[in-house]
Amino acid sequence: MRKVKPSFKVWLETEGGYIFGEGPFELLKRVQEFGTLSQAADSMGMSYRHAWGMIKRVERALGEPILRTRKGGRAGGGGAQLTEAGIRLLEEFSEIKGRLSEICLHEPYTTVGTGSLEGMVESIEAAGDKATLKIRIDAPQTVKSTTTKAVVERLNIREGERVTVRVRVTSVAPKRLKDPK
Image (cartoon, rainbow, N blue to C red; front, top):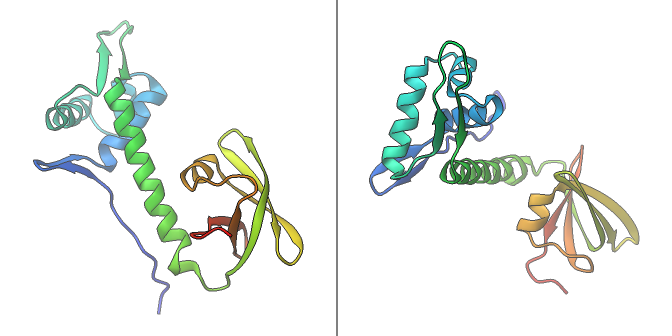
């Protein structure tokens, strides 16, 4: 039997239905990258008209603009940037998608070959979007765990706090204890 793994699609909706999914998410990311809707659409292999329609459908469903554009022309000069609502939508979608990916990749589906150790966080060093935690385990040994700063913030991990360290073949990941001692 082939290896089975979890998979999912994420989209945002209101009581009125679909608002935002992978297509608009990728389009907005590329608008941020290229600075124009035209280049973003072209990089995805879609027409400008289709991309514009996609943006307008999201804006109608959301009830506010997600993109601010400047007219250009053949000589150039046009551009596009996300509004605060567009940035917020992109960030929320990315956060939800990241959390679901983390669950699918690191929860029960990958427990084969894993173990847990408990210990106290001695220090947290942040660099860019990564964070390295120095954890004194009860063995007595100290291990280092590298994760994202977002995970450290979301789990509200603090120095001096007891955590569970989940050990996998290729990495060490911290998990906050529900009842710290």
